[in-house]
Amino acid sequence: MVPEEHIKPTISEGAAVCHAESLCQHLECLKLCGVDGEDEKQILQSLNMVLLAIDEDMQTSAKLLTDYDVLPALGKILKTSPNCSEKVAHVLAELAKNEESRKPCIDAGLVMALVPLLQSSDQELLLHAGRAIGRICYDNNELQEQLVELDVITSLVRILTDYPDNDTLVRVVLLALSNLVDLESAKEALSKTTVVEQLVKQLKRAENHERVEIIIEVLQMLAENEPLKIQLVDACIQETLCDILQRLQDSLQTEDMCTMKSSSDLIVSLLLGDESMQKLFDNGRGVVYQNIPSWLTSQHTLLQMTGALAIANFARNDTNCVKMVELGVVHQLLDLLEQHVENGDVAVQHAALSALRNLAIPAMNKVRMLEEGVADRIQMLLRSEMPPVQFKLLGTLRMLTDGQADTARILGQDPKLLARLVQWCEAKDHVGVRGEANRLLASLLRHSKSQDVVKAIQKVEGVKHLVSMTTSEHAIMQNEALIALAIASAINLEVVEDAFKESELVSVLHKVLQDESMGPEVKYNSMGLLCSLIDSDDLRKEMEVVNLKETLEKLRGHSSSSNVVKQANKVLQIMEHSKENSEHFFP
Image (tube, rainbow, N blue to C red; front, side):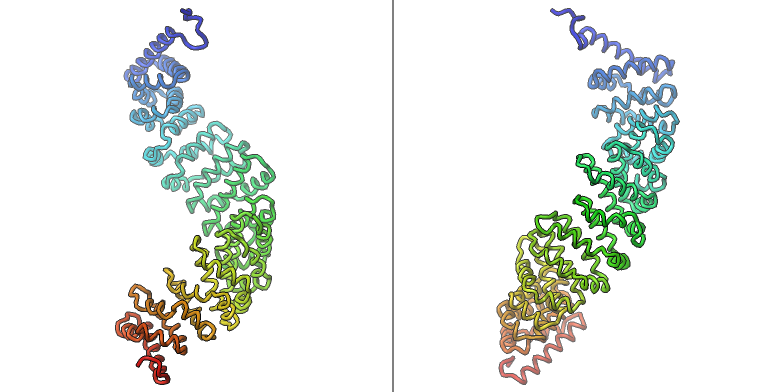
């Protein structure tokens, strides 16, 4: 057998036994010290031995600490022997690295015993106490809520304020905050402190990637709270974030790309609040807005996305929209879109179109944007095969035509646009694209009120899709289709009559009127369309076949809507008048 002293570098079996026996003696000592308040020198000696044991064999040492029931004694030492607190906290911080040791620590009440130590001015004690609490409470919501109730938040912010240059201690506080800040109670408590100011200072001085990421992660969670979001803007976090994006934009390192992404996400989060967004815009003078032109023209898709999303969020009120159009942001967006037409970034196109759509909401912007050729330029995206881009393109075009007769008349006669619209009206894989295509088709008729548009839409067989749209599950779409069809039939019934017959429009309208769950506005507009159809002999015959008169009489007698009753009376009167002039109607 090899002599024990020759077995290296591991501890020999005999030495291990002696080592374990020695540790057990120290554990017994700590247990007694916790009860009898023995001298602190002995306590410190035993704690040092425990630290060495944990370092050499975590699992065995942790088990012995639990088996010997030493943890409650450590709690008593924390309360009765201030000079030993740092060492106890150090032992607990190391012990809590072992996940299985955390529950015994909790059961022994050690968290509550450690919390008061966070009020100390001893930085080493704060370091170990902070680590111990953080590790023991990791991923334990109930315990974390208790920490917030014990006002740990105030202690953490104080440490951050008093010792900003102690990087190791600051890291412990940042990790603690990242574990707590997801709680609403923690956000509420933090909103009453100077944590935002301290974190912004820390972000400015942070040099390594890990520190920056932890701080931004905490700030991102803080930004979910409206008061904190405003505090962040008031503390000028946006300036620091813009500086980070500027500094890292040419880097190809993965960690720098991650930092850029988290910085960009935080900027967008700040823009989601109405008050914080307005502060950031500052009538076009804010640092975020000032950076948009360089972001949009950057070769970095992340910056392009950030710029487009910033515009889309700034464009949440009419005043901002008008100001941005005045400042020339529209063509910056269009230039960006042109870069991505062929095999471009879908997310960037989606964001840019969202921005254009929002900018087109104010009436005065529509006119200016159309004068500047926006409708023509964005049609380049008609060849896109990406549903998200198609969806936003359709919504933007619909917004531009809203209330704009000339634009609706021009677009409504564009054969390429109409052909693409009809194709998208049949899209089976994307309900949103199909719905928006139908709505734009209806919008072109509603706003142009043009015979040429009616003919153009019928030529590409678009009318049948509007008839289908009258049965949509969304009342707003039903009404848009009904009004568009009524306008088309009033302008030139002869052009659309065959399409109406082929798509069985009369039967569709009859079912709408019979459906008790259908809203009064839909029924009202359905009868308005029927008024336009009565001049057609063939369509009148179809009304006779489905016994429409009986349904109208029921509505006249039982409808709870006075408008529906009036409209039913109107249709019946027109039908009666037609009967007098035709032998082919109701006998």
